Length: 171
Image 1 (spheres, rainbow, N blue to C red):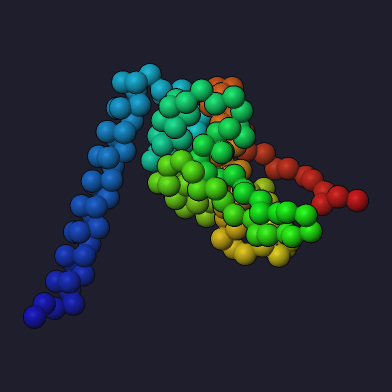
Image 2: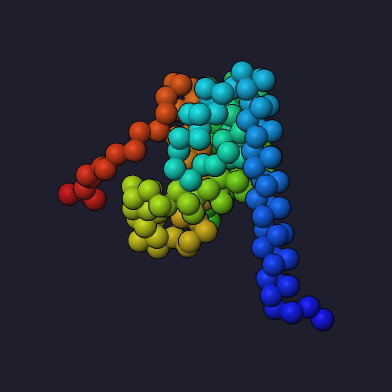
């Protein structure tokens, strides 16, 4: 049997190797982005709180894939738009359409959590929870917000400007 010290050392070595491989993957992704001439778009997406290198590459590749007329079209392509089930007085549940690449939806959903480290995004997420929405729905709404922001920044070739925003909840 292995001693605790040996197990701890092998775990540390394994984690070190994983981090090294992740750095190599990030370097390869950046090299690919540069070879395609998408570096400016990549920097725009990467400037958004919560968006890491993999998310930024995925967003840029999706943006470049189609000629989206608006952020709504981009969000619809990603499948982050909401389908309403209503008829007459019947009010059904609202669900995501889930069209488009499921992996990008997953990446954006996962990006919503670190994005909440930016106070305005955390406040936006909390407002969704205060409306009585489940945590998953609030995260999906924040993921949709990240997609809209990414579309706008890439389309305008701007970077995300962090700022302390003073806003009111309404009258």
